[in-house]
Amino acid sequence: MIEHFEAYSDLEEIAEKLSDADPTIRRIAVIELADEASVEAVPLIVKAIGDESTEVRLQAAIALGEFDGIEAAKALVIGLHDADPKVVQAASDSLAELKDPKAATPILPLTSHNNEFVRAAALRGLKELRHPDALANGIIGLSDEVAAVRVQAIGVVGYLQTEEALPALINACRDKEAIVRRTAIGSLAFSSSVHAANALIAALKDEDWSVREIAAEVAGKSGFDSAIDSLISLLTDESWQVHLKAIRSLGLLKAVKAIDQIAPALDHEISNLRKEAAAAFGEIANAAALPYLEKLVDDPDPDVRKNVRWALVKIKS
Image 1 (cartoon, rainbow, N blue to C red):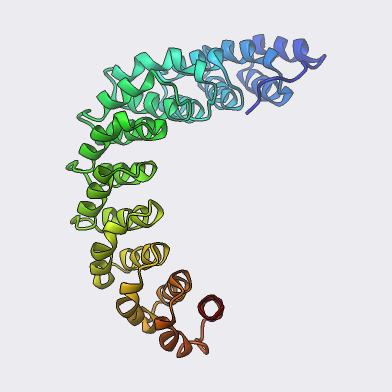
Image 2 (cartoon, rainbow, N blue to C red; image 1 turned 180 degrees about the vertical axis):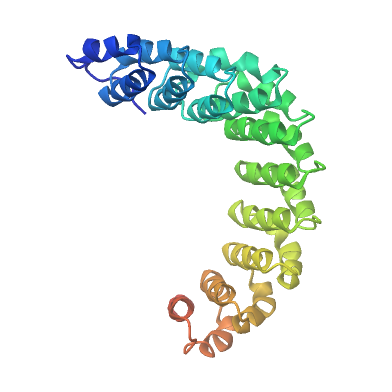
């Protein structure tokens, strides 16, 4: 992200091209201004966001993603209202690149815009800014009628990582749309509360495999021992991706009681599951896993063999 660089002597020369009658030359001027990497170029690129040529406006929206600050944010907000969808998308993408919390000021009002794409883009842009004033907007966004907006709202609230927002995030874990539930579950990793643990355990039984998968992953990363029994039940899940994440988390949780239930994965036709099971045994580091691992020292997959050797060393050391 470009913030402070010395302006180059040819900046004014490039700026003159923005008034050229040929839109191609004006577009190239925008590219050159971005390449100058000078904050002095920002007002000039901002001017180009109102150019009559779609291609010039598009290039300006893209170029502003290389800069930061409130002026860039104001221009990108204009871009979000452009008549051309390519410009709107580029403005949305560049908003998401902003890092300066001050840039939140012109973006915050857009979270209640009547256009769902603009609402989603505004929330997406606010996520990385971690501005405290965005919390209220994010929580409101969790009740939006559009799933894509609710997903972006979770990003804003989850990035702030505040226990104040936990009830709203937990409620989102019960959303009617799987993509929203999945995103909400993923956002709970920051919390060590029993309420977050209970939400994750409930999600381990979700009807959608992708939700169960992320819940299994977060349970291990968050260190929720209370999830061990539910994770063990996922070792027979119909989705191998869920099975894999359950094995990984049981390893992270050092679940000795799961050794016998993990063991069948060492014979699975999918090598990633065999590799994950061996790694989990290494994390658990209990002698009860030795008989299972010793049968796998000659596995045809080199990555599996590597994990087996590592696990054996961990257990025997």
